[in-house]
Image (tube, rainbow, N blue to C red):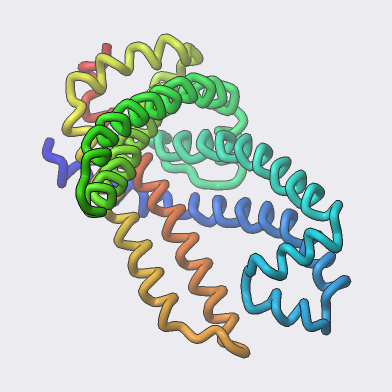
Length: 290
């Protein structure tokens, strides 16, 4: 089966499971509300109707942030802790929700409701968390390879007589880093999907066996992954383009908020599309799984 047909099948699967995006958005919105509300109350209480409050409303600035850090020496540390703790919680939430997404995608009966979704979240959480731990070694390998590539570029740029080699090398290094990360992420996506399809708890063995599965059809799987990535990139460019021309004064702030939520919906749908296309790819080659 060709890449385009697999993509279309994944696209169709993602649209049939589109209700999952609503679940993701609700979880994301509630989580963000819990994190932002205390900070908003603090800022409103301390700086409402003040000159500093007006300056802060215009956007982030190093000058007012430095003044704030100097005046309230304990606040930056408290805010750092308030950001770090939710970040860790969000990591667990991310792993948790992936179980619900892939579980509902792989359900042939296509039952999409809160009960089934959260049941899959709990069922696959510990398997996916072990996959996450294993994936850290993959990302560490990416960092090592990227540094080796960077050292090769350094040999080229050290003898450069203009700034162009520096500009080109920095862009190329960033592109290589993105591509390497995409490979690792794609690889472990297939591990998680395979654990669900086979209803297996052997995360280490499945991760090893996946080397043979991806290795034999790496180019095709990666091109399919990049195709979905291009869809996500186009959505991001459309969002940025429209955001720049949207006024954000008065009641139009509500329109900006709605547009931001539409973009968040779109990003979550792209995530669903990634899993859906990968699921179709795995199922198509299921008979040849090692």
